[in-house]
Image 1 (cartoon, each protein chain N blue to C red):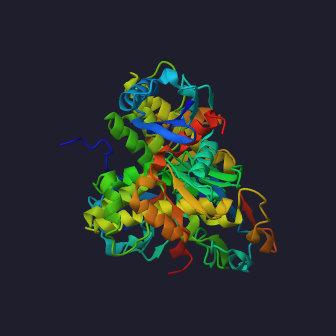
Image 2 (image 1 turned 180 degrees about the horizontal axis):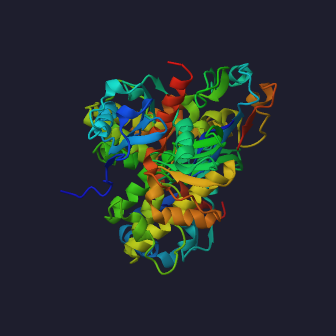
Image 3 (image 1 turned 30 degrees about the vertical axis):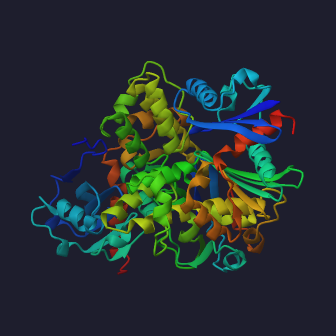
Length: 255
Length: 289
Length: 95
């Protein structure tokens, strides 16, 4: 039996097709401004890539900020539940899930059977989300893809004064003018958001093992800052941005 | 070259009816903000001259620059002849010639008390990178305050982001936002980053600029009202700072509050520097140095 | 004077309020806080006050939501150490 999970995030739409608890195919597209159109394109791309036709999928569950827009979905699931489900399925030793996406971040503590024990959400303020990193990359004129590796070449840490993405952008532009080394600024960017994320994690209590999911986990600079700030081992699965959709697909299968 | 939509008009003024050499106490206040800087020269109890400039990237020299501009066209008045100067604002430590630095909150309250009269009880200051809600007594002394300088929403910078997005000069955003037949719902995010994203989507859907501006101004007014509610609204109510010049935000604010703000008779951006100059005067009078 | 230190951003309102008329600068709050959120010294807002007063440290004022995080777990929140330590009930939190 094939099931699928759709995660309609603020920036990207992820679709994961699952059979017998394993991922058969997956796809990621930009959400853009017209979510319905992007969704159709996402399904078409996935079919072209995997040969699997949407009609052959038994049940679809949607998650993410835009989950109500998924016409094909039979039901929807909160991001917290989806991330918890997906993370635990990938590694049954996980007890704390940190999910950092484009416009929201979450800290979730789960029990051994996957029950959500506690969670905290950072949303509606760009400073604790991937949007912060995007804005800062623009400010120092580096692509998101380059930012992570750049930060690893930093030789000293520096604290950012501003706590808002808009003000931080101005602060960085000033530092660029005064020739502050870009690797140091890149590191400061990741340290700043890691600091916020870790404070949020401490509110639910960080219990090992900790897994980081969501698109921002692809940024090695952020992962490094997070591990340093949390002072704990952090598991980053392959394809971290697909974990929510994976969890939704598992729920669709009745797992 | 891309147009700098955030560039608002700088200004200076000398009081044509005063002669500084005939006066007793001459003091100055300088307010260095991250976006704008002002200098006010007081002769006894009247404003003698002032200047209002963009701080720009030269923050350390901003105090000297704005002070020099205020001193232009003042019939020979020089910095040396000013008896006491007080610095304030975000960069108040950057006023090298000031004898003392005083917090912008206290200065805004005192400045508003002068500008609006002793009946003023609630002051809303919306500056370049902060938003303050202040209660003061009839002498302009602070009795309750909060300052939001962490978040860009409700600040001039937030409005600049939108001016830039829409390609509208910051001097015109207020008027333009009022050119809608029907008030649209406010943008759902108060976060400037997310609101900007939302606005881009609205523009794509065909919303004209005025409508987007109206929606954002509405959201900004809503944000600010909640800050005022935290300290309570007590009349008379007055607005200082740059956004006081944005009719679109002011009108929406007044409508949500159900209160009319007092009509300003002076440039609302000089309130901080004015309060600083007034503090300078009271410090001389108390014999403190 | 009622001093509200903190901010409002997209995610909520986070203010620590200090009633400076009732504060005598004893410093119990500064000692009790595990995150060094408080300082006692010259009033940063009232230029005419001579006695020391408690205020929220500039280092944490703009990230107070995060600084206070340790004392504000999502569930089973215990009484706040700063509020409990103050003998005159000067401090309150908005969240």
